[in-house]
Figure: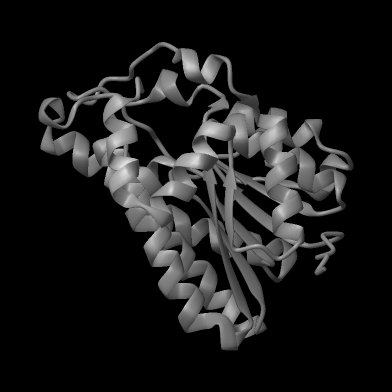
Length: 267
């Protein structure tokens, strides 16, 4: 079985100021990777950096993922310091808690901008470096919701599904040039994602879902994800039994999945 070594790999993680991104950064740093941390919250990024072993090796690089000029400047900064990028983990994103008929077009566009367009734009920029290196790994954090679609997450599910299929195309096109592409599909993880999820009018929900409050920890998610990535996996579902079952049934019997979702109590 393939085992990818992470020591001294340059790994850039977006959405790294908390939750899944922070947990991934800590897991990677323990494996010896050199981590570049990006998000908008400067103080939180620095807190995460200082929590990593050999903190001075790592870089806190604040960036608004939706600002393409900021993306380019950040890429320039990474290359100036390290000279290469081995992995890009596209983890930044925002969720949703609103019925499809209660969601405004502006909210649709905001979710798609953050969860799809910004990720693709940054990936293209980083790919320009990886292709010159003839090596690199793109990792996209999608969602089980992007595989199955659920109530209250129509726009979010659509954006995460779009990310998944863009990654599939990139994987096929770039494999011969030394580029690997993986997609991770988290189920419920105990983070602040539901607190920040957008309601139909674009406001933050401001409370944690019961399902997330009782879900796996970000640290458990990071450990499972990193194990799969080190083994060279490209399609990685990380979640509880119900989420894994839904993802499997969606591939085997979509009609059965639709019936299950209709009867489920997802909020």
